[in-house]
Image 1 (cartoon, rainbow, N blue to C red):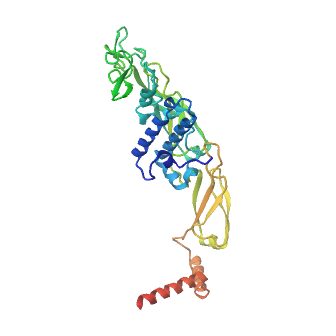
Image 2 (image 1 turned 180 degrees about the horizontal axis):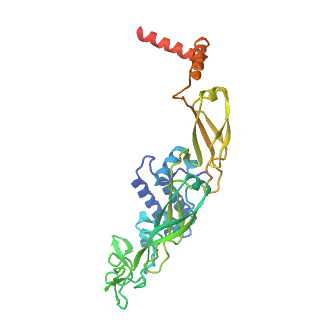
Image 3 (image 1 turned 90 degrees about the vertical axis):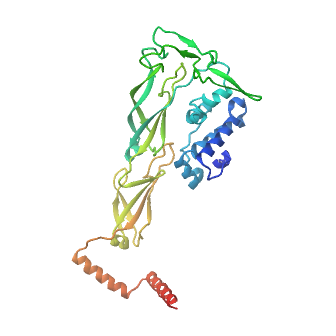
Length: 376
């Protein structure tokens, strides 16, 4: 079954700004949220479809590829959301919080105080093109908050007591009314904790958590591209009140290569050849990520022609077909030549004046007609 156009899914124009795309997605997410449509498979389908569309159109690189190539340009690069929690983990920040909380937790949550999910953390990893092609294990180093050992994450000085929040009565949430609509939101005073710290811990200053530098091993799959991210579930910051940990997202950047330029899963190599190789044909060695390979240049090759070495590009990180190596030739004119070379080129020039090629005749004819028209 073919996919619907992502712009059509969100109900926006192709030139819509990012804020308009986010606004449209928020409306659809509220409309089709599973908690407000229990047992409705069609609503669940629309909910995931909107999330997939937003993931592509909110990313400048993915949106550009989608605008150029349609769904084929982003196949394998969009997440496969299994449920609402996966969507919250990816886009929770546009609703005012990570995970399953934020706006949706307030609109559809129960009456009691919920255990909040820990915050996600970001780690950056830089790869060479060869590492991105083969896959590699990397050690990430980043800052992550941990529960304070002095107060065991409570935020209070050991031995001291905490006071219940008077604003929410210890529930962590307050009920707000707007006409006939009643919305349950996180308490702005205790921020959902349901309690107030009277005597804060001196080590964490009442936060309950302290930042530490950690090292984490991560396996980077083969074929990753610039801007992709690898999700490490549960490796984010701990919850402030006993909920699940957040996730760590390793954002990928790939160093610029001296020879190859990447376009999706294809690699592009600009290869200089001499005039004689282009005119007479040649068999030359070209570099690939796996080592040198032979390429046959046919007689009469023109500057800019492209030759394909199949499956010598980048692997697909989703397990699809490996890309190709596209070799684009251009004729290189030498800046210095020997005396013998100059003599031979002059002889060739004399021959060309006698035996003019059909293409050149046609150009000279059009040039003569152009000047004649200009003088009349």
